[in-house]
Image (cartoon, rainbow over all chains, first blue to last red; front, side):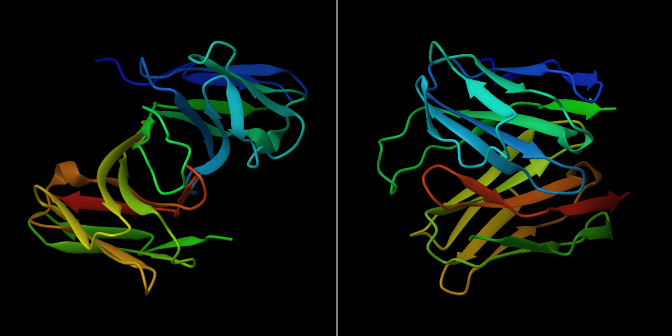
Length: 119
Length: 111
């Protein structure tokens, strides 16, 4: 079946502009995650959705970053007033479900990422 | 705060060698540990997932071990091939559904 897809694959923008990055999770997956990977680093957690709501947004670096998932499927990561330091690969992942208990876990399946370059 | 470290940062070996990648984490209260592979310009491919109650997992030429009390995991690759060349990332589940990643080991296997 189809995996996690992300669009665009590459985005070049100018400092100060607004960008939107889209993630289409695997069909039926209720949990969705955004991570950011800077050059030479491992991915860093940004935000996690369970259904339509953000269950944990503790990784968002500041209030210029916002993410939505209005219908519990597709998610959009929005970045306002972009800065050069926002340049990175933004990765999306989904998993089938969570039980709501810390002791449970479902494997996260990652998309190919969106490479964002802020000039 | 959970921190994950991977050693070495880069590794170059001739084809056919067996090799070991190391991962360490500071907080032993993890729920599981996962090894990923990342090819240039690509997303992450999950290789092995070890639950906190398990000691190791195997898949083909790959074997991953977990020593939770000492905060360590190793990924063993047997009979390496040029197609194994990639970056290998270790990640622990620390907190509710939040993966914490290491910085990765870049592996190059020469024919």
